[in-house]
Image 1 (cartoon, helix red, strand yellow):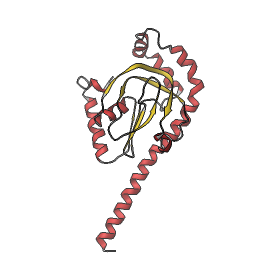
Image 2 (tube, one colour):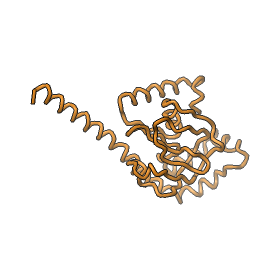
Image 3 (cartoon, rainbow, N blue to C red):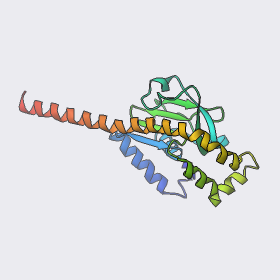
Image 4 (spheres, rainbow, N blue to C red):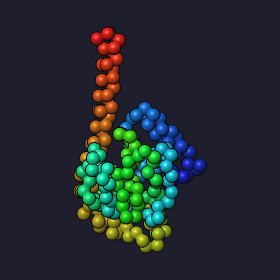
Length: 201
């Protein structure tokens, strides 16, 4: 599905409203693939078909901004990550561009300090990738590309790259979870300061 299918898939509108509410409350938000596109669209950016579908393992490179970003700081100059998308997005206004690839310029961004959009899939494991490739609808999507994507090659490449993908996912998701602790610490500090003001300390 695409963010631009919201007319026939109204749940996408609901998801964007929830994202908007979370951003207003300064809650950590992480969007992956379609989720990144939903986040970008919620922030006013345009989502549109990429010049080529990325399905399988592709090189992604971090931007200079990623080097000082807590989630993407562990990315080397080039990382092989798993992709499955046909759409892409513009980087939202005031957001930081964090990653790119040769086929898709906008692979990741951060808005504020705790809202992230990742076009690529760090959450997958090896069995999941093999299952995705065997789903009838996914097979149809690949076949419609006229041989540009070789599913057998993806099956064969997955064991070579999955370990590094897991290392990246552990760091990225671990750092993202820390954002919730940071938010809780801020809330506790605000409460402490408020109590001091009220008590006249």
